[in-house]
Length: 315
Ligand SMILES: [Zn+2]
Image 1 (cartoon, rainbow, N blue to C red):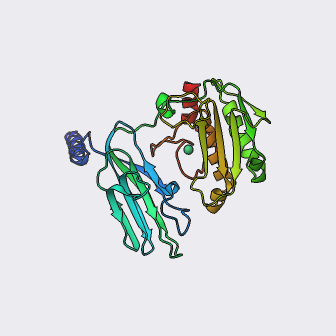
Image 2: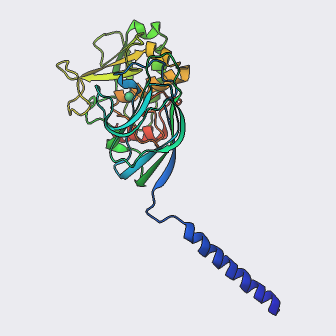
């Protein structure tokens, strides 16, 4: 009996010691959090032309994140190429307020940027030597504070149509010419089918419909697709204006989507994203959010539960 209870005692002591030694290695409660992300430059075209904005990636995090840094799993560059992380976007210099800059040809791995506050613009510039640049992969973000996706009013532009209960939609013949009609119908039906949201649409043959969709085949332009709202005097409405939308155009760029090797799913994802803009959803910039409203080439094709709950909140 004595032996057994001594063993029990020793065992209890061992557990206490293990707990104690483990606690030495526990991070402090306010330590930075590391989150896995996938933020990469893959599918950049070769011979990327400087001055084109589409190939910048913008990193924005929740307002409750006080500082963050990005981890490059790898950077692979041809001679003359460069990767930069900047604090602001400048169409001329491309690298205003440089936070991190890498321009050695070849291959490097496992690099952290310095700590960053505010948005960061990740930019890959490749020269015109005809060589393929493998670009970069950012696989982790470490942040102080808390990270959460943009929800409710924070997920929207400050402006919109006054109602989206029955949007009239005109599709120019070019939409069908380049093969985008079914993607448009699918995306509009997704919106229409969201429960507890007053959203509907009617196809129109009038070129003065509320939404006017067209497609082009211009690979020299720097966008996959875009939505531009206008006021009642036909003036383009800026993202931050508080005006009511009178009508909006949506342009789908078949040329750039082809250049970037878009699959049917990638195209559907882009059209769904643009249709999200039509109901005033702005970009969901948090890297950790699961949303069709994030920028870039998309692998998902539908509004996520986050997007749907935001749409239900607004409409
Ligand atoms: Zn967008």
